[in-house]
Amino acid sequence: MEVKADMVGIVNKMLVKVGDKVEENQQVAAVESMKMVVKVPAPVSGTVKEVKIGEGDFVQEGDVLIVIE
Amino acid sequence: MQRVLVANRGEIAVRIFRACRELGLTSIAVYPPVDQGAPHLDFADEVFELNTRKGYLDRAAILETAKEAKADAIHPGYGFLAENADFARECQEAGLIFVGPPADAIEAMGIKTTARRLMEEAGVPVVPGCPVLADAEEAKEWANRIGYPVLCKASAGGGGRGIRTARNEVELVDLFSEAKEEAELAFGSGDVYLEKYLVNPRHVEIQVLADDHGNVIHLGERECSIQRRRQKLIEESPSVVVDESLRQRMGEAAVRAAEAVGYRNAGTVECLLDADRNFYFLEMNTRIQVEHPITEMTTGVDLVKEQLRIAQGKPISIAQEDVAWTGWAFEFRINAEDPDRDFRPTPGKVTGLRVPNGPWTRVDTAMVEGSMVSPFFDSLMGKLVVWGRDRDEAIARSKRALSEFSIAGVKSTIPVMLKVLDTEEFRTGAFDVDFLERWLAKQG
Image 1 (tube, helix red, strand yellow):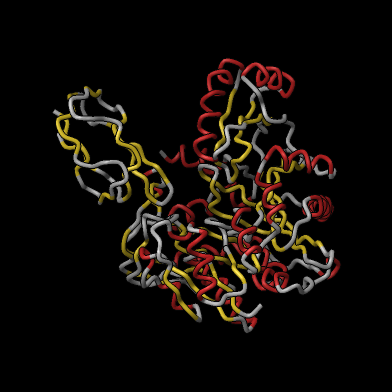
Image 2: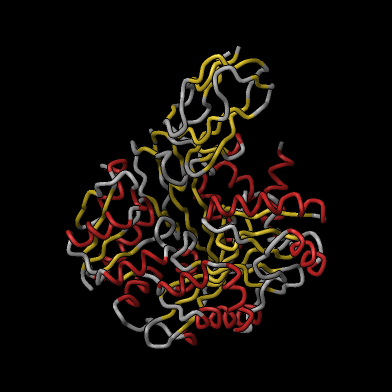
């Protein structure tokens, strides 16, 4: 399952790495835009299969941040 | 002083360029690469690129460009470097006039615990609280003396940031070390202190001006209680709860506050007002504020021109006894935020724009059709400022103007502000700083 940015901005925090187990609704990243930080929760429980974006990267709405299996 | 560099962007940069032009001063814009071609640049007489990725916060790059541009003054606007004492000092050392207060005054007001002590000494009431705390034990002792709930605040914080609430001892002990850590990270100092949590206060602030000739005056109050996440959304002047006697007492206290720190130029003394209309010093904003236009509308004093005149060494153009307030003014912050999604930022391209005008309707903005609302800066796209002879007329005119305002491509705060104007609380003025969040929660 792909976790996408739902806001244009800069990835302010990437809290998981490949292989991490995550619970549904656990915060996995944070995106900052216009001085506001929005938390990105895991939509499902599972294992992080891919991390596509690093801290400081610029993302568009809809860009894939991580993939959870 | 002939050449003024404006170290800012967007609507406030335009505001300062306009004041410069009216005073016959040459305005100089600077921009980092991300703001290349930004519409505010069209309003300046001269434009220079800042060769930096740190943008408007790069003090060295700005000072360098000021030299290259042969500027003799720098106006910082609000945000960015406006309340940076080091920058004010560096300007002075470089032989530039900083259009703002002396570095020492910025510093004194920037450290909240220092400011509170100075205010108490000057006879300005402060919210009951304590000095910087050594540890959680001391915090517990003070909290018992002050009475719960208490706010734990970062001494170097401000503008509503770095604040936590504790309702009891358990919560206080829990949040204390976290608050210290967060303060260290966010403000470079882990100093925290406690303040009594006032129940349902209003935020009322006083505009002051001070010049080099010993004149310090106040221009009355602005009511800024319509906030969400401690950020102001709608401001008005005067305030429905401030009568002439309270205005005079608050104004005199604000003047004493400014005098206590050797203040110069324009500044704002922010206060909380409790249900019994007792006022308490909250903090001083040592700069021009976003909401300054409502004071301009009710007093007729051009605050930015006053700032520039004061920086030139001239006296304030009006005496305290000549300050008169006429009518009622509102300001609406038109932010690129989606009220339906918890006010989250909505950067993007403005694909369509209709800006209201008509009688007593002022819009301060740098936005044009086709402009990009950048995720790198704050969400303020513009400000709608409306004046009426009384509050009812000003509200009716505000509704008219807000309904004329249309922005396509990005979401804005306009629709939610129209709804707020229709609430009983807003119409009667019976609100406090928590009103908007309570109301939003009810809307689901």
